[in-house]
Image 1 (cartoon, one colour):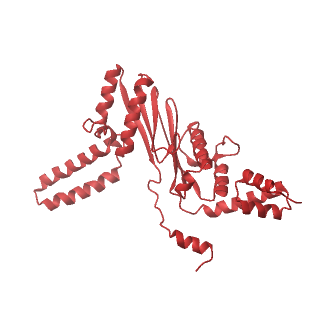
Image 2 (tube, helix red, strand yellow):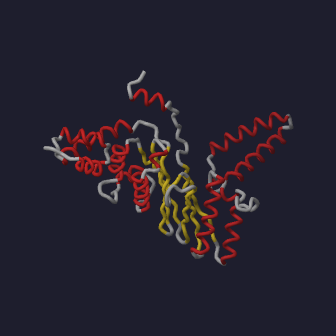
Image 3 (spheres, helix red, strand yellow):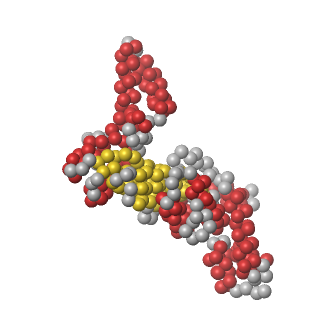
Length: 308
């Protein structure tokens, strides 16, 4: 069965595979479109499995909100180039919307959920790996909610609406209206993006981290040669400063560089005539905590081409 250039184009559109792969599949299928589609799908899934071990530290963070609920999702790819791909962006956007409709933060549950275009999120992900040609992973999810009030989203240096490299959600509990909460939430979100708080308040700071800071402070105090009781006060002071600098509510607001965030929120509530409480937040920075493997791109190309 013969095939035409239009058939190759159709096969590319249906599968997302490269032109030469499409031509080869049609050759092997004798021009039968459906057989060629199945062959490419089978090869794609096999290729996707091989790619799954490659480091994916680029990609996008997506945020979505629905009034009193919000969710952030990180989806990784191997290169920043893929993050600019319309297909990848569409996947992150729709997957984040799916996550908003679920409860919990289990990645496997999200991957098992129905995808808007059919199948599951996980199946669509595998298909994307096959067609785009890079390993991709749904890495993490976090959600926030309030009983009454607003969850405000913010994307720093957005690649597209609600997609980018630093996604923030701010949960404000209040009876105040959106006209008050939205601008306040956005300013706080911008602060969070810039100041990188480690917890909402001092009690939420990781205790292992506190102990590491205490050890460092104790070593510095010991070097001072001062009496033990003075050294103890120096250590306590260092830990108090660490907590103040790294807990969101006690951080100095970046917008005026003098007022603690807690006081900014309190004043906004007084001005509105209704109390406002900052109850939670999310800050997802793309690739945070992923160890990137440095590769020699020229060597990889040479190896792929069989050049020694």
